[in-house]
Figure 1: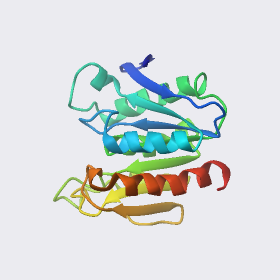
Figure 2: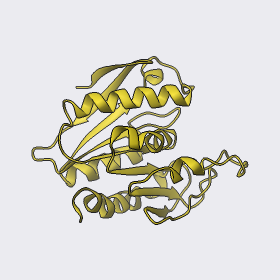
Figure 3: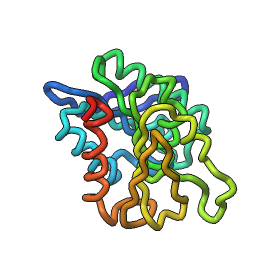
Figure 4: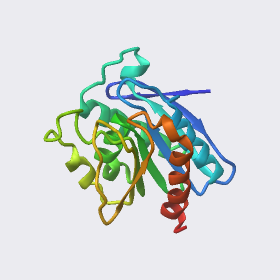
Length: 201
Protein backbone atom coordinates (compact mmCIF):
# COMPACT_ATOMS: atom_id res chain seq x y z
CA UNK A 1 0.00 0.00 0.00
CA UNK A 2 1.62 3.31 -1.04
CA UNK A 3 2.09 6.03 1.54
CA UNK A 4 1.98 9.78 1.03
CA UNK A 5 4.60 12.21 2.28
CA UNK A 6 4.12 15.97 2.33
CA UNK A 7 6.93 18.01 0.80
CA UNK A 8 7.52 21.75 0.29
CA UNK A 9 6.11 21.33 -3.22
CA UNK A 10 3.16 19.03 -2.78
CA UNK A 11 2.35 15.46 -1.87
CA UNK A 12 4.71 12.68 -2.90
CA UNK A 13 3.70 9.04 -3.05
CA UNK A 14 6.07 6.30 -1.93
CA UNK A 15 5.92 2.55 -2.44
CA UNK A 16 8.00 0.87 0.28
CA UNK A 17 9.01 -2.78 -0.10
CA UNK A 18 10.71 -3.93 3.12
CA UNK A 19 12.74 -7.04 3.80
CA UNK A 20 13.04 -8.89 7.10
CA UNK A 21 16.70 -8.19 7.95
CA UNK A 22 17.93 -5.37 5.72
CA UNK A 23 21.60 -4.72 5.03
CA UNK A 24 20.75 -1.46 3.33
CA UNK A 25 18.08 0.71 1.76
CA UNK A 26 17.62 2.08 -1.75
CA UNK A 27 15.36 4.96 -2.77
CA UNK A 28 14.60 5.28 -6.48
CA UNK A 29 12.95 8.01 -8.54
CA UNK A 30 11.27 7.92 -11.93
CA UNK A 31 12.02 9.67 -15.22
CA UNK A 32 10.61 13.05 -16.23
CA UNK A 33 7.36 11.81 -17.75
CA UNK A 34 7.62 8.26 -16.47
CA UNK A 35 6.50 6.31 -13.46
CA UNK A 36 7.86 3.95 -10.83
CA UNK A 37 6.53 1.04 -12.91
CA UNK A 38 9.28 1.55 -15.52
CA UNK A 39 10.70 -1.88 -16.29
CA UNK A 40 14.30 -1.04 -15.36
CA UNK A 41 13.21 0.38 -11.99
CA UNK A 42 11.19 -2.76 -11.30
CA UNK A 43 14.18 -4.94 -12.27
CA UNK A 44 16.44 -3.02 -9.90
CA UNK A 45 13.89 -3.24 -7.09
CA UNK A 46 13.80 -7.02 -7.55
CA UNK A 47 17.60 -7.23 -7.42
CA UNK A 48 17.69 -5.12 -4.26
CA UNK A 49 15.14 -7.39 -2.58
CA UNK A 50 17.24 -10.42 -3.44
CA UNK A 51 20.19 -8.68 -1.76
CA UNK A 52 18.20 -8.01 1.47
CA UNK A 53 17.82 -4.30 0.75
CA UNK A 54 14.73 -2.28 1.62
CA UNK A 55 13.30 -0.52 -1.45
CA UNK A 56 11.34 2.72 -1.75
CA UNK A 57 10.01 3.91 -5.11
CA UNK A 58 9.16 7.61 -5.07
CA UNK A 59 6.59 9.44 -7.18
CA UNK A 60 7.37 13.14 -7.31
CA UNK A 61 4.53 15.56 -6.38
CA UNK A 62 4.01 16.78 -9.95
CA UNK A 63 3.30 13.21 -11.09
CA UNK A 64 1.00 12.56 -8.12
CA UNK A 65 -0.89 15.71 -9.17
CA UNK A 66 -1.32 14.27 -12.67
CA UNK A 67 1.15 16.47 -14.54
CA UNK A 68 3.60 15.06 -17.09
CA UNK A 69 5.90 18.08 -17.36
CA UNK A 70 8.45 17.96 -14.55
CA UNK A 71 8.74 20.61 -11.90
CA UNK A 72 11.85 22.85 -11.87
CA UNK A 73 15.02 21.20 -10.61
CA UNK A 74 15.07 23.03 -7.29
CA UNK A 75 11.53 21.84 -6.54
CA UNK A 76 12.34 18.26 -7.51
CA UNK A 77 15.39 18.32 -5.26
CA UNK A 78 13.57 19.85 -2.29
CA UNK A 79 10.72 17.35 -2.56
CA UNK A 80 13.18 14.44 -2.84
CA UNK A 81 15.17 15.59 0.20
CA UNK A 82 11.97 15.83 2.23
CA UNK A 83 10.84 12.35 1.18
CA UNK A 84 14.19 10.73 1.94
CA UNK A 85 14.37 12.46 5.34
CA UNK A 86 10.92 11.15 6.22
CA UNK A 87 11.82 7.63 5.11
CA UNK A 88 15.10 7.67 7.04
CA UNK A 89 13.21 8.70 10.17
CA UNK A 90 10.79 5.83 9.83
CA UNK A 91 10.59 2.97 7.29
CA UNK A 92 14.23 3.15 6.18
CA UNK A 93 15.85 3.99 9.47
CA UNK A 94 19.28 2.52 10.14
CA UNK A 95 21.15 0.72 7.38
CA UNK A 96 23.28 2.44 4.71
CA UNK A 97 21.38 4.35 2.05
CA UNK A 98 21.68 4.20 -1.74
CA UNK A 99 19.78 6.73 -3.81
CA UNK A 100 19.10 6.68 -7.51
CA UNK A 101 16.63 6.59 -10.32
CA UNK A 102 16.22 6.63 -14.04
CA UNK A 103 16.92 9.64 -16.27
CA UNK A 104 15.60 12.75 -14.49
CA UNK A 105 15.40 10.75 -11.27
CA UNK A 106 19.10 9.94 -11.57
CA UNK A 107 19.90 13.64 -11.90
CA UNK A 108 17.92 14.43 -8.74
CA UNK A 109 19.74 11.66 -6.86
CA UNK A 110 23.13 13.01 -7.95
CA UNK A 111 22.34 16.60 -7.02
CA UNK A 112 21.06 15.65 -3.55
CA UNK A 113 23.34 12.73 -2.64
CA UNK A 114 25.37 14.71 -0.13
CA UNK A 115 22.32 16.39 1.41
CA UNK A 116 20.61 13.07 2.17
CA UNK A 117 23.75 11.29 3.38
CA UNK A 118 23.82 8.68 0.63
CA UNK A 119 26.48 5.97 0.73
CA UNK A 120 26.21 5.44 -3.05
CA UNK A 121 24.27 6.55 -6.12
CA UNK A 122 22.67 4.43 -8.87
CA UNK A 123 21.93 6.09 -12.22
CA UNK A 124 19.83 4.34 -14.84
CA UNK A 125 20.06 6.04 -18.24
CA UNK A 126 21.64 9.26 -16.97
CA UNK A 127 20.70 11.99 -19.50
CA UNK A 128 24.15 13.46 -20.07
CA UNK A 129 22.82 15.99 -22.59
CA UNK A 130 19.65 16.59 -24.62
CA UNK A 131 19.62 14.57 -27.86
CA UNK A 132 21.74 16.28 -30.51
CA UNK A 133 23.07 18.91 -28.09
CA UNK A 134 26.28 17.48 -26.61
CA UNK A 135 27.54 20.89 -25.50
CA UNK A 136 24.58 21.28 -23.14
CA UNK A 137 26.07 18.78 -20.73
CA UNK A 138 24.94 17.70 -17.26
CA UNK A 139 28.38 16.24 -16.52
CA UNK A 140 28.89 18.55 -13.51
CA UNK A 141 25.97 16.85 -11.74
CA UNK A 142 27.75 13.51 -12.00
CA UNK A 143 31.16 14.94 -11.17
CA UNK A 144 29.83 16.53 -7.98
CA UNK A 145 28.96 13.11 -6.49
CA UNK A 146 31.61 12.07 -3.97
CA UNK A 147 30.39 8.54 -3.21
CA UNK A 148 30.56 5.36 -5.33
CA UNK A 149 28.32 5.66 -8.36
CA UNK A 150 27.05 3.16 -10.91
CA UNK A 151 25.72 4.36 -14.25
CA UNK A 152 23.88 1.81 -16.39
CA UNK A 153 23.56 3.24 -19.88
CA UNK A 154 22.19 2.05 -23.21
CA UNK A 155 24.82 1.76 -25.92
CA UNK A 156 22.62 3.75 -28.31
CA UNK A 157 21.26 6.27 -25.83
CA UNK A 158 20.70 9.57 -27.70
CA UNK A 159 21.17 11.37 -24.37
CA UNK A 160 24.87 10.50 -24.38
CA UNK A 161 27.28 8.29 -22.51
CA UNK A 162 29.01 9.34 -19.26
CA UNK A 163 32.64 8.41 -18.77
CA UNK A 164 34.32 6.42 -16.01
CA UNK A 165 35.94 8.16 -13.05
CA UNK A 166 37.70 6.86 -9.96
CA UNK A 167 34.49 6.38 -7.99
CA UNK A 168 32.13 6.05 -10.95
CA UNK A 169 31.53 2.81 -12.84
CA UNK A 170 29.73 2.92 -16.18
CA UNK A 171 28.15 -0.26 -17.56
CA UNK A 172 26.90 -0.20 -21.15
CA UNK A 173 24.02 -2.48 -22.09
CA UNK A 174 22.19 -3.15 -25.34
CA UNK A 175 19.53 -0.64 -26.27
CA UNK A 176 18.66 3.02 -25.93
CA UNK A 177 17.39 5.37 -23.22
CA UNK A 178 14.62 3.02 -22.08
CA UNK A 179 17.07 0.21 -21.12
CA UNK A 180 14.32 -2.29 -21.96
CA UNK A 181 16.32 -4.16 -24.63
CA UNK A 182 18.38 -6.08 -22.05
CA UNK A 183 16.88 -5.94 -18.59
CA UNK A 184 18.91 -9.00 -17.59
CA UNK A 185 22.10 -7.01 -18.19
CA UNK A 186 20.73 -4.09 -16.17
CA UNK A 187 19.90 -6.43 -13.30
CA UNK A 188 23.30 -8.14 -13.51
CA UNK A 189 25.16 -4.83 -13.30
CA UNK A 190 23.25 -3.77 -10.19
CA UNK A 191 23.51 -7.24 -8.65
CA UNK A 192 27.32 -7.11 -8.92
CA UNK A 193 27.60 -3.55 -7.56
CA UNK A 194 25.03 -3.17 -4.80
CA UNK A 195 26.40 -5.56 -2.15
CA UNK A 196 29.89 -4.09 -2.54
CA UNK A 197 28.81 -0.52 -1.84
CA UNK A 198 26.58 -1.51 1.07
CA UNK A 199 28.81 -3.94 2.93
CA UNK A 200 32.15 -4.12 1.18
CA UNK A 201 31.15 -7.04 -1.08
